[in-house]
Image 1: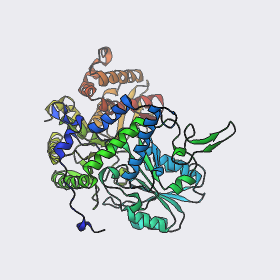
Image 2 (image 1 turned 90 degrees about the vertical axis):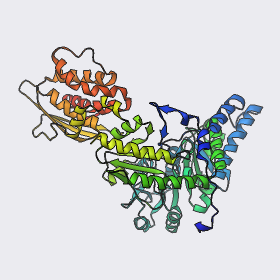
Image 3 (image 1 turned 180 degrees about the vertical axis):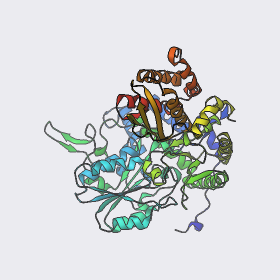
Length: 418
Length: 154
């Protein structure tokens, strides 16, 4: 890939973008809100809010059921959201998109259905030390399920990057059936070299699941170019609503996999004795799905697409450079992770302040950051930070001035605890 | 910028947070318990030595956590020394009310003076997410006295 040949992305008018997000105009304790916790959940643009209201006010009914006008309209909207998600990931077919509640449920679906239904005893799942608990706990549950599935963990180096040599070593015996790793760490900001991971894994007969909860928000994702087998992301981090996530999987995989949950809408026929499954994606969408949320997600995808993923990526690259510079100047601050390829997530400690005390202080300055271990306890243990870190994470509406405000508040916080 | 936070982080709290008292392992302890706050990683281990009448003759702890949780544990070990187990439990109940509401109308009688010493921690009531930092030590004390070994303030 020759980056220099790419046309420069259209610049992003952050002032105009901020006007699209009603919540950003509020003050906290008398100061303008500086929201630096988008990595946990992002704020919502008016377009998403209005699309959901419009759906409920004018076009709402249950989907895939009624042969009446409103149900047909709602079904059309719901399936249009699926098509939008497919375009967003450059999936080959909308039938490869399964709507879930969030990324966590998407991974649980794969662990349950692929892990218990397709993987064989003696095979292994290979994850990494930098996984969010959502991409760790479901695999521990699979391992402990008495099916003879092993769980292996790829190391992370001191810079916070995936140790690809260790990955190769752990793939070498050919027993790994599935590599399940993050596309971007929610703690380190590290973007993982997914094309190389896929090439390595496939060469050893392993499928690849990528947790795109963070990555899909920050850069263009093309599942066909990456070549992975499963990819997931969640609506609420992509400026969409809570309660909806996306699992993308190759159609051939979805066809092999047994259902995850049973119920209405996922069957072809039912007798009291047995049932036959509907084809994917319906097979994996038991019960009434998140209809209004799907409409909201569609609006969110349209929103970021209109702004332009390349423009978003360029804006965040500038934020990352600015944050690197400003945070390095704060005396006593230690950044966790210094990966070459990284996104807008910065976890740090301040020498004389515990992360919780620090976040309480920053809140007084109107600055919202997350404190704790960010659902990645083993990673914090790996770096000897059992007490946790503070994390500032950016969105497309984040400004350099907000990063300045953070850096200045950190200097004052250090004086406070001196 | 942070002047109004002096109510929460009073000098006594910063002092006990930086230099917790009774911060040591108690050999030959009669009671002990671990306290965990799994969401934030705060963790402590508490040891109690009982006197001939069953009163708390000595109390000590080790652990890690924010200034509030360390200061609270430090102040607690100081205040429960010499108290009967019933008094210590009562103080824990009263402290919970103090931390959640900022006041303790029934903090009188024999424990009045000791509750006064804990008053600097009452500022946490304005910070709902921090109340559990202040109460972890007292949950752990209750677990130690009741022999449940594990406590959490979640």
